[in-house]
Length: 427
Image (cartoon, rainbow, N blue to C red; front, side):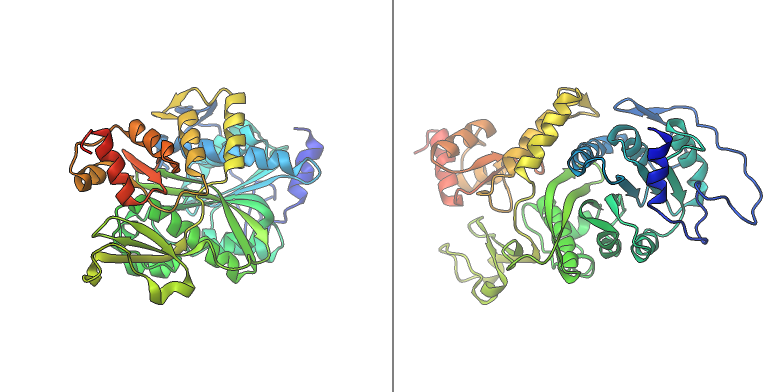
């Protein structure tokens, strides 16, 4: 990029004296030798880097691919009139920051990691793409919440903020929303599988404002818990969010959600409420706040109160935006990413499944084939055959990228069992 563009991007940010940056000379410190780019050990979609001693998972590359695709579409929509700024709040070795520079074409990227011991690795990797004096990046070593809060107080707003956090600490979400431009993208992370499975209800309540109990689709609950926490924080600040995509990865496991920030509160709370699951019949339903005293199941078993499990409040709306995902798939095809398999993940297959999951008719949750087989007292029907049969009956149905060997459908559980029995010729 031309020097003028880099200068314009750097000028959009001011660096506090307490935070030495590569774009500002260090005072009262001994000069350090310039970091040499480390020996390449890894590559993601043609971008080479060295993870050094940082925690790095090659299995997480698909999540980074999705982020690059989404950020690129957002940059194209924003146009060239305003510098496109990205912030990686917990950057590790800096691979995400590097990809935002090299593949998204960001005008400026701020890479932050709390560990100063990783500075040579981060600087070395970013220097591989662009070196002084024309570099368009900065490196810092601060607590993520402090960094984001300082950016907000200095009125320095970013187009994309990526927070690849560990565990279920969500204290950074409010600060991240404040440091985000209106219309900007926030990439959230949780690895708190215990809360998603209902084993850490106090933790989920304190972090996301949701009381979670065990249900048959915990991985989807983990995503909805994360979106719901962000939606709650946005509403407190007078904003609202929409999820562009939600991605669950089995390794870790990792819950990642890309949300877009919008000005103003939404009318009503139609996408923020409670999920009720009946262990007796297997049916799940959603309930709003105005229905809290009426949560029940219409099945025959109305005697045992323990058969009803309620979780929430959390996000009950769509997990993805259909139009945005379709554009992501088109871009992946344009770049030659769609029909390749990286670390066992096909982006084309993943995005196709997400697009099907984004059908607004589909309720929260999924049903595993072994549960259908057990309740219908038949052998498990073929997944594709069951989906096609449900569609022929007029229901929405698709695979779930979240639950292996599971379907999402708006078909009542009783009808679903009937279809499974028909497939096995038992009716």
